Every structure is written in C-alpha cells, then in structure tokens.
View: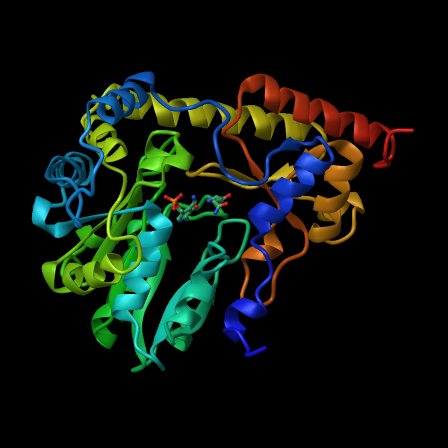
Length: 390
Ligand code: PMP
Ligand code: GLN
C-alpha cells in the first residue's frame, strides 16, 4: 500500500474525542470536551426549524446568506466598534473550517506562524499541513503571562502570521490591551498577519473586557477575526462560523472555503442571523450564567483541595492537582474518569513544548445539578483516598 500523508498518519485522535469516549465507556460526568448540556435559545432553534420547513434548502451563496453577513458585521460593530461591511464577511461551517481556510490561504511553505502555548489542539497540525512552522510562545500560569523576550525569540523575518485565540481556550485568559499592543508592535515590525480566533468573544466574565486585536491602531488591515455561532448561542453542533477581515485577505480565504465546504446549511444561517441581533440582555445573560457556573464549580473544587486558576472567559476552569498525588495530568484524568466518574482534559494535550503535568481542564457550561454531582463524586473519591469504589 502507498503511504498516506505522514502528518495525519502519525497524529493521535483529538483529546476531546478520546476523553468523551472514555466518559461514555465509564458512565462518567463529562466535564472534558467543551459543550453546554442545555441547548441555546428556543427562538433561535425555532427560526432554524421554520427556515428548514419553509426552504429553500438549496445551496446558499458561497460566501454566506447576505442577511447573515450583514448581521455579523452589525454584531461586530455593536459590541466591539469594528467597522466592516457585509462584503468583508465570509460564512463558514464552523470556526474550525474558518481556521483551516485562513491557514491554507495565508501560509506558504516555510512560513513561520507564532502561536501561544497552550493553544487549541488543531492549531499546530493545521499550520504544519499548510507548510508552515509553528513557533510557540510560552504562557506562564497562574496568570498566563508572557515575556517580551519570548515574543522576540518567536518572531523573525520568516513570520507570516500570529494565530491568537482570545479569550484563550484552554487557559481562560483574556489578553489585556497592553499584551495585545506588545503583540501588535511585533506584527508591524515583521509585516505579519494575525488570525484571531475569537469564538469566545461573548463569553467574558466580571471586569475582564475582550479587546479584539483588530481594533488596535493599524491592525484592522492585518487581522482576520473568527467567530462561532456554536459558542455564542450554546449550539456547538451547528457548526456555523464566520471570518471577517480586509478584502485583500478575505478573497484568498474564500478560495480555500470554496473547495473545502463551499457553503453552510441555509436554515442555520438564517437562524444565526436572527440570533446575532438579539438584544444586549441575551448576551449579558449568557455571560452571567456562565460566570455563576464557573464560580459554582470553582467553589466546589476549592472545597476539595483542588486549587483553581483565574478564569476570565470561555467554558473552562483549570485546576492544579499537583499536590494531590494523582500522578501526571494524563494519569489523573484517566483515573478520575474510571475511579471517580468525572472526566476532564489533561492540560498537557494543548502544548507544543514543555507541557505542565499538574493541571486539568474542567468544562463548567453544565447544569448546576451536574456540576454539583461532579463535585460530590470527587468528594467521595477523595474520601476513599483517591481509589475506585469497592
Ligand atoms: N477555536 C476554539 C478556541 C475552540 O475552542 C473551538 C471549539 N469549539 C473552535 C475553534 C471550533 O469551533 P466550531 O465548533 O465552530 O468549529
Ligand atoms: N472546543 C471544544 C473544547 O475545547 C471541543 C471541540 C471539539 O471537540 N472539536 O473542548
């Protein structure tokens, strides 16, 4: 048999799928893969159902329905003051497709792409498949700060782009304006692009404020911004995403899209267009509910002696299990599923270099009773001396 592409042949199955399968096998509460356990707004789902019945259910325009492209541009303007037109918006089948389209279109063989460590699991493989070389910049817990020297070491004349996830999965960090300025300085100096994965743009808590890199001086022409209706409407299975940016970048990215999915289901596009125009109270409610869940889980875990890190946005809470004697994060996550009946994701899965082995990622976008039951199971496990039930 002829060989298959070595990058994919050698790649393990994504950690989200691995942990979700393990959770099913052991009937564990799944706080691993990031998805809410309650579907998003009924009115948005109803809009999709109506559009499915009324039709048309044929190919929508390649760049997306005009009504959705307009709604994305309006939403960006309303929340972040970004001034783009519907023509600057491309609709994709999820943010994952958007990431792939952007990397395929902007990265040439030998280009370097700066990313932060930890980063979302598809980033490095997609960069490599596009012929690029990932250049990680370490973020240091507990505040996930980075050093200017590390940035300077990662950027070079070969830098084509930075791939920035803000708010950051898995660390739940919201980058400050000062941090973004430091990044922007390097982008200008290297004349590089920024691919900004902002799928958690509306899931930001407390005093934290999400500042899109594109809003900094001179950055709009270098930045493409990615969003996901899956996160904004707690409908992760819908896979409706979008990319916005200057037409010089959206044009080649659209060429990548045209031969990847070409388009996205029309009824979901119509419903997302409706959802994006929901009043501010919807968005405040979403972030407020998630913040309360974060606090509920953090309180429960802290009470058990799992120390938790600050989480300013996204679905995730990081716990430091280094003192508990559970082995590495991979062993701890495995044991926690099998012995306690609670599934998480080991943080080391998100690293290119020097992974920590004492951190677990817990997903908190679950019903309160599910979070409470998870904490109760962990409590019982601790009381058994971290052993399986007899
Ligand atoms: N980027 C990040 C940082 C994510 O956490 C996710 C997870 N869902 C995605 C992209 C993919 O989003 P989608 O489901 O819309 O493809
Ligand atoms: N974004 C989700 C997470 O971080 C997973 C999405 C997926 O499974 N591809 O858990």
